[in-house]
Length: 181
Length: 181
Image (tube, rainbow over all chains, first blue to last red; front, side):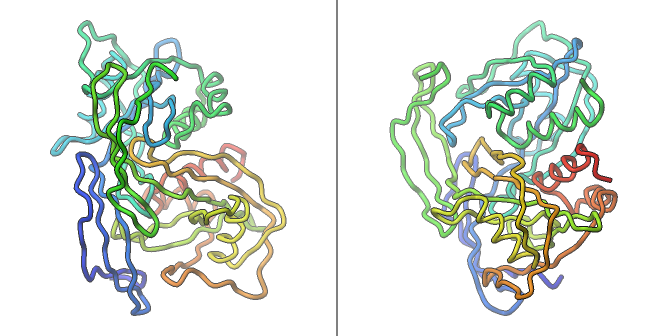
């Protein structure tokens, strides 16, 4: 135990969804007082940075209902129960882009919203893409369009906020920091 | 309207919390079929990268109940209703670090989890810190410890996953990309 720990007194699930659950925990604070914590439970996710042979990043354009707008993002998807992140990353790459790879590198993992959610993203990269001869099906409620951009072009979309999510903004800065032009 | 838009047929709030609300939307997909979207509504947040006169970044160490562990992060906090992000950033800087500034720069904004939440973070930076003579009070359920680290030291904490949230990982890479050592 550490000096900051918040001990759970009671935990109540207030919403059981298809993707997220929400719970409210009563906690004992370090000073002995109590408080409530609202927590979104998420299965975790993967994202992958696909770099093509002609040195472009492959993004997916998709409607994001929480924001009521279309964003351009690196391919990503939720972890299935019992599935390793690397397998999920390969599956999402294949389904969303029509490419596959025999060679992906793990970049890092990170929490997206540690204040209210336990979502973690495992990030991968690959620059050895092969076109699938047979396309995989997307989830039935998923509609995406592909867009290949150079680093410069991607940075322009950050400026216009068509790219506006942190995993994608980070991925672009990450590639730049490794010397990609 | 665009080709990807998901039209809301029905929207039901399933949880009204102190910080987040959760709604389930029935949507009409681009192919005419229907689906459900689980959406976390969040007031939005700010984060600030404070760089001290001796070229160290000031982080806060705090317990994150959703992860049941302590993380080291850049100072951050939720937007209050009607408050501009810059004012919130200054307030969080003062409350969490005991420093103030007359000069902060806006870095960028980003969505943290566009698949299930509308949280946006406005990111600022400052390198003109002044120690407050009178300390501000933290929220009554907030307990933080300060930690000043060089870029190198911060990168070691990324490796050990004591720094493990994307806004902080991004902030460190951002400073490095600007030449900070």
